[in-house]
Image (tube, rainbow, N blue to C red; front, side, top):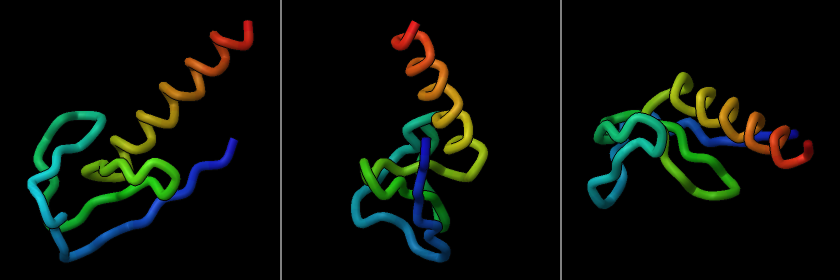
Length: 62
């Protein structure tokens, strides 16, 4: 499984946006997943998302 993201520093999204993992408002730096364009407030929230996605895929394969 391969994940790719863009790290954005010193810039907030055009519209008010919230982290897809923890639902906190996005500030001056964030991650955006390339495939889905979903925003995450930091690398920890993105890692939690990837971990949950991998678990879901493992359950579906069983």
